[in-house]
Image (cartoon, rainbow, N blue to C red; front, side, top):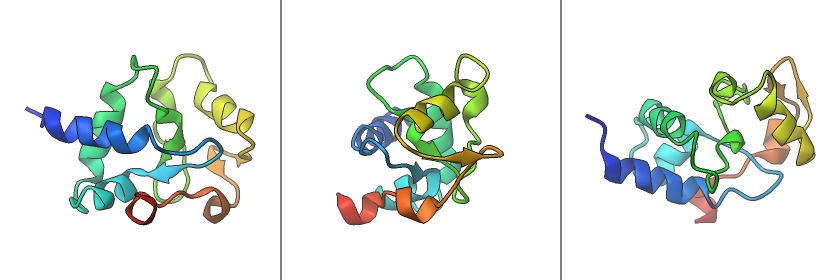
Length: 108
């Protein structure tokens, strides 16, 4: 059984990702003091698909790949949401990830 408290902590961080920025599952885990729990952050993000106040589209893998895109309604909704925030994506990967990357362990 997943730790609901951990999921809520993940969501608290995810809600703070600024418009036009992305972060990774691992960066959120690190910010929560659970650096080896990136997969659990992924489970939390997967479980939040009906929560409109969580910008799940801004959480990608460490290489900038849109690994969670199949959890969004529509064929390319995750990509469209990111592009609407000014983030360029080619072949399911963020172009210039460093420019758009938000580091919660530094920013929070």
